[in-house]
Amino acid sequence: MRRPDIMFNAMTRAEIWLQDTLDKPLGIEDLANHLGYSSSQVRRQFRLSFHVSPSAYREQRRLECAGVLLALTPLNIAQIALRCGYLNHSSFSRAFQRRYELTPRDFRQAVKTTLHHSTLSYSFNTSIEKTSDRQMILMRLYKAPEHIKGLGMSAIITSN
Image (cartoon, rainbow, N blue to C red; front, side, top):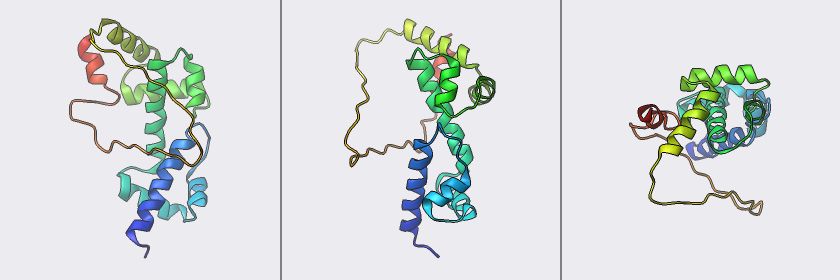
């Protein structure tokens, strides 16, 4: 049996790999090969660590990424679908609507409406910068507060 700290490190590497390869059509066998474990062991340990299968985790991250791109970029929906690892616009739209109960177009419009009506008294700038390959920041929110559903959908829905 493997030591728990070794499996924790492997599952952290698995999470990072899944995050880094969202746009690629890779499966559990690719992940298992990357980690050096069997696919059944990776599935079992990932589920124990994150309470979800690796494929469900990847789907969640892809849709979260899509939500951010819909909210913050002018990319069209087909471009966002490709960037988030979906092979076509329609499969992306179906998955997005299943998850957030809004089409990608309606989600984008709801975010724009919410931001337009927002009366925030402060401003902020966001930037993404490339750092050296030796630096890495890993941030993971393990449980969202009760009042937030998905990507803040409750805030969007209540503002309408």
